[in-house]
Length: 185
Ligand SMILES: Cc1cc2nc3c(=O)[nH]c(=O)nc-3n(C[C@H](O)[C@H](O)[C@H](O)COP(=O)(O)O)c2cc1C
Image (cartoon, rainbow, N blue to C red; front, side, top):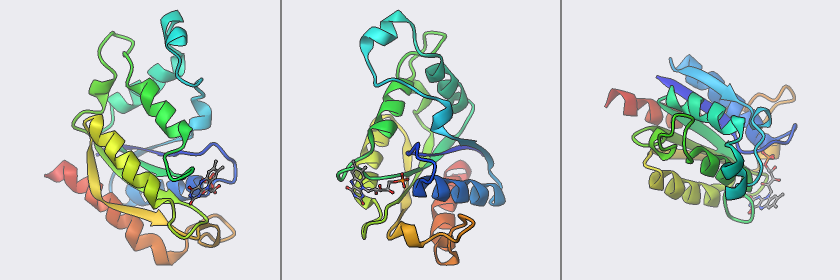
C-alpha cells in the first residue's frame, strides 16, 4: 500500500510535523510504502480562479501526480480557531482542480483512503479540526478511517530528539492499521 504522509503546518518547529514524521516511520514499519511530503516544498498561492486561468501552478500538478500513484494519505493537522488551517484547505482545493491531462482533480481522491491525526498544545489536541476535515475529505469521495488520533498537550509529548513519547505509539499505530485494513478489505 502506497501512502502519502504530510503535516498541515509549514512551521519549522511544528508539532504536527513531528507527529507526521512519527506517522511516516510507523506506517513504513507496518509495511506501507510511504512518501513523506513537506508542504514547504509545494508552495501554492491562495486559490484564485484568475491564477488558474493563467495556467495551473506547477506544484498543483506535482501534488496531483503524487496522489495519482498513491492509495491515499495520512495527515497530521493543526487546528486553527476550531477548524482546518487554510494551508490544508487550500492545498486540497487546488488539488481538486483539473489535472495536466484535463481529467478532474477530484477524481484523484475518489475511492482512496485517509487517516487523520492532529496535534495541539491545547487540551483537545485539535480534535475539532478533524471532524471538519473528515467531512471535507468524505465530500471529495475518500474513505476516512474511523480511527483518528488527536494529540493533546502536544508540546510536552515529544522527546528532545523530536521522537513521540511511547504512551501514544499504540494510538498512532491504530490509525495506520485502520487505514491499511482498507487495502485488505
Ligand atoms: C490562528 C491560530 C488559531 C489557533 N486556534 C487553535 C484552536 O482552535 N485550537 C487549538 O487547539 N489550538 C489553536 N491554535 C494553536 C495551535 O494549535 C498551535 O499553534 C500549534 O502548535 C500549531 O500547530 P504546529 O505546531 O504544527 O504548527 C491556534 C493557532 C493559531 C496560529
